[in-house]
Length: 82
Length: 178
Image (cartoon, rainbow over all chains, first blue to last red; front, side, top):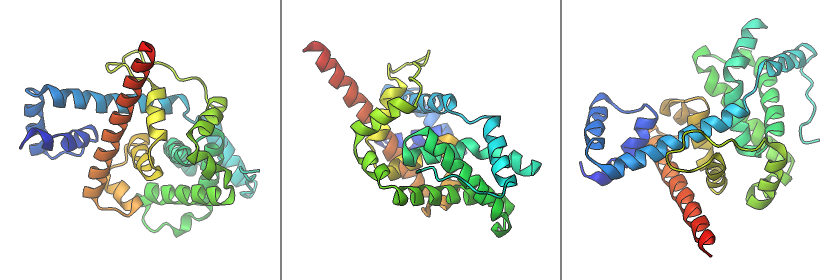
């Protein structure tokens, strides 16, 4: 496998979608390819930034209560576009 | 009702992330998430396989978002106008926090700007993957794609994001030198 064929596998590595063979193959490659290591670090960093962003806007128990209350009152929802 | 509360708790942030991808602000996204769960509760008898609840729920959420955009064309124009969208977002979101560990020197703002510049279907698949770690199989089922196509598209999206973030960084460096 040549170096240009690895980046798609790096994306799958981030997502935990590699087979055992692919996993071992890419680990070997990462140990000796600086470009792919850099690309992998960038992909991980994207994931980390997005998780941080989503964590700050996460819904809490108040949302669960609001949904329950709307359902118990018959399911009428105010039009959010209004 | 308690069992449904558990389902809401488990999936609320996935639905929120999906809706945010469509409408670009958290207030409207939360309203749409609420509508999604109410509709899911009311039509739960239509769900034949409980194991597919998440995909079924996200399909409801997706339809809600599309209906919302059709109902209110302001959101479409907002989506096509990154400046206007940025302005509205800055009024509805808290300021981004710099991550303590930034090996690449990029911030959340850089990532969101890169995401904003992508086509909606690219943003959508990226959000689906990250908000609740949906598997390629689940995303494929939700979007009507093959598992291989999901992997290839996610790779393309990430490469585009990297390229845009790097362009933005080299652009600001040039400005600093001027």
